[in-house]
Length: 252
Ligand SMILES: [Zn+2]
Image 1 (cartoon, rainbow, N blue to C red):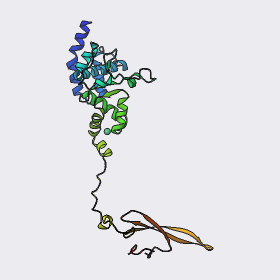
Image 2: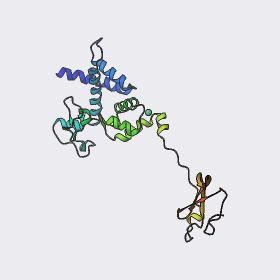
Image 3: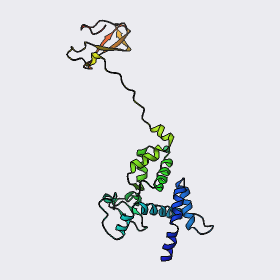
Image 4: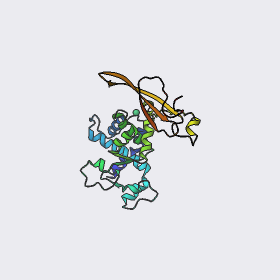
């Protein structure tokens, strides 16, 4: 057992180098699984999964060494830890997971107790990129939702946003248009103590075909809007030529 642990520890620098040098999660999983596979042995899903778990454990140890040490000794996690409110625990494989109250829920174990990932680690970035790309470059919210089905990233939304924004196409697609600066309101809209409809905006709509005696004729709707109160007044007219209405100064 001691020899196995020693051999595993001797591989840690190699795994660390593989994490730093890998550009995709698939390549990383294959490389780490290959370290353990016998010569010529085919890489199986369980070997790949074990390889990924080793990387995750390494990332967790680099960021949460104090917390893992405390949990291994059945002690309380420090008050200043970001994992303080997560009721975190170590699973039988030694992975740090979120606790919570979903033990009896009929969900898969990863969703009930997501694996905790540090936000600044390269492995977290590779996992997020993998999920983001597998969901056809989904938005930050959607990618975070998919990540949360298996992992809990500390400061997750900011981390996922950074990953999504690292793709130029995604940054362009999800960018909000720049609202143009509006001109100052005209004096007639901000001068108080004038009767309503002293200044109006006018628009026409139609034509509408209305029955007149035994035929149909065109009629237009006129929309007057008071520039001060934004009240509206509707009239039906025969033509689109401006007409004088019943209050003075409404139409110029
Ligand atoms: Zn993208």
